[in-house]
Image 1: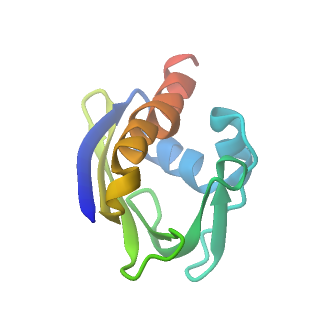
Image 2: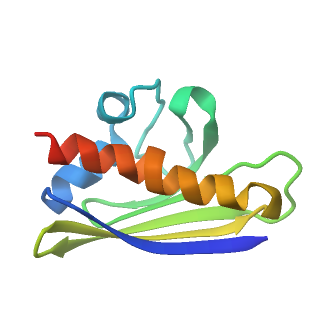
Image 3: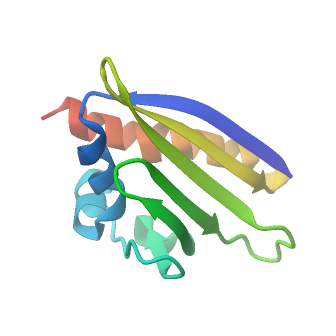
Length: 127
């Protein structure tokens, strides 16, 4: 198991970035894929047409998102924590994704950089 931590910046206010990550219709707009999302702790979610599934654990409006991502057969919980901060360029997200299975680690790092936050950045940069 490996952990991944990285900071990302976006040219938009923190509240807009938070809403883009927590409203299913917004997620579909920037990802181009179906999404099921709720800000109710304990609710299940599905992103990228079901490629990513898990459970929502904690939300702090405009500041923090904590989720458990499911990996088949995994014993330890894989937790994604996104801390959202104001930044001189708009918003900074501190991402920490723990307990990523070794065999999919590189794929997930690439996914964070290109698909997840890469597409979100393009969404805000193109406005």
